[in-house]
Image 1: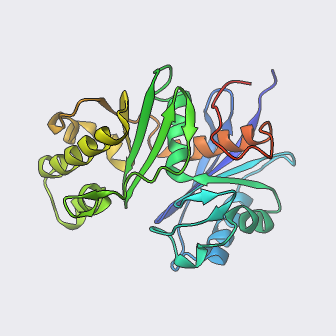
Image 2: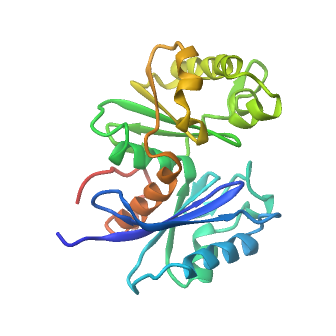
Length: 265
């Protein structure tokens, strides 16, 4: 099979990343491009920033695009805005980005994109059963995959934990803002993961986000029933997963509205 590629975009609350991904190997080809998320992060401003990133890459005409976005995405439409400007709610992110770039863009939740990447090419590869991906950053993002099939938009970072939204206790932003030691913060994460375990009973929990680069700082303090490991694709996971989603969107029936299987062609 000839080499196939797609562009992955990872649109976050603080930064936007883009890269060309080999869909067979998961490798980012060449340089990954990064820009700050504009403030305010309105649809027009974000789309313009994405367009500028795309123009910095030498892309073939047939390139397909995928974008991970910090929101629940239903058929391309933004329905929540916890870490992005509220003006996005109700907007069709796929259409907004497609019109600016001039190419069709397949959009999905950013944590779902990271989960897809880690199951296909990262630490979750070949692991059977239920896998929960948890990204600890500005907030808490989650992805749930069952035997390699994504259950989209789980948003399990927002249930109540000791009277507060879970991400107000266990996100990396809380650690930084409250100047918590790694050990103290890890106990907050442990409480969150224990509650998550009681909800979905995963066989494996993968911790992503920037903290995944320093697992020795907090994983030794966490004791929960499932196996907990650090993501291995780091900040590339969102880009890789978005590209995979875009590449496989071409092969999914347009009338299918449920989860999709992450399988080889």
